[in-house]
Image (cartoon, rainbow, N blue to C red; front, side, top):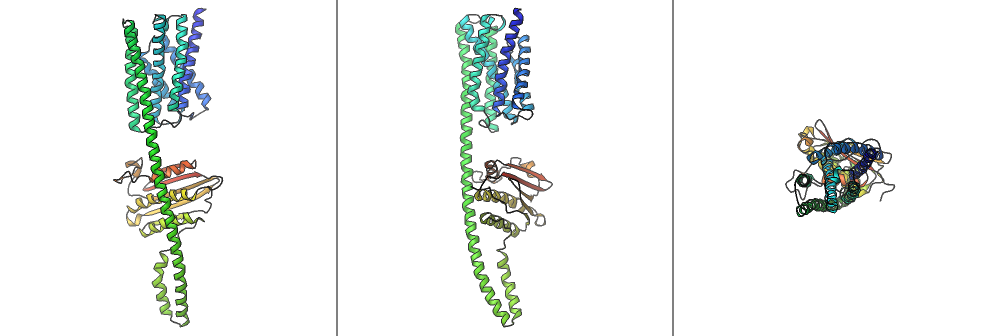
Length: 442
């Protein structure tokens, strides 16, 4: 009867421990699951982890390197059920395992000093072991709560170098902690040595927490600086587009004035029946009039100026232009639309210009479905861009002043709860953006 009771107590402790681990993992990915609901995934993960922990506890008193099985289980669970990058999944798997094993070891070391008996905390059915389980679960819950502040949702999003740094520190620390605890269990050490080893374990854990904190803060600082640079470039684009509107307005006024003069001259030539001179006059002034040709009209002066300026530039470079646009652009700020379309067309023109003259083409499509605005620009390319440059980083030498086009496109899409998609079809590059319209234009 006592054995059955202890088995149930052990199972309950493993269940609580597994729940904490799985709950921490799911929260680290903001509860974004691939299948089922987050609660069902939580239940599946908890029961599976409880089974693994119970089996390993029956096999050995201390897992040591065998504890890496936990990392594998966490990682497989994240791959199957959760959304997120592989780097973050690997990191969270290792971090969860270190928290699980480290809190158990520190709890055991602290209570072994209090009860003056180490092994009975892990193997014997005593009150001391029961106290060890309770203390270990409470300690783990506290540590996971602290770490959740760093890992929750998108707060902990690092680049490759930052991931490499934090993962290397975690791996080295986990191996050292495992070696220390193995020495505690197997070695004949006195209390002074035990205290030093306990302080060493605690120091390693603190080093990892500090490293995590510093890396996270540096990453956030870098993101804020990058965001400010993107905003600066967007403001520069807005000013440039405003100047373009002003110039086109002045050009239209001059054209209107010139047209009055042209009409007066033509009327005089026709009245005098000088038809040859009239035809010559029309031919002479046709080119200057065609340079001010309006390519598209979407019912928005700011957007019109950008589209007309960019597409007229494309035509002057020998690029074939195909447009399919609609006038229902409400719900998106004009400045954002100008920034978005300007950057998309700049990239398309730059790429198409590299092609042979007869192969240069750009196709612009703007359509609206419900409260979604879809913008797609296709342009010809000389070779695959995504194979050589999948991140679409700038190839220009001054990377500080350039490379903000793609970032601006993504930033505006995120502002309106939309998405961006870049793909290729033969030798055609496609940039597709979907925006969710606001209730009214701000």
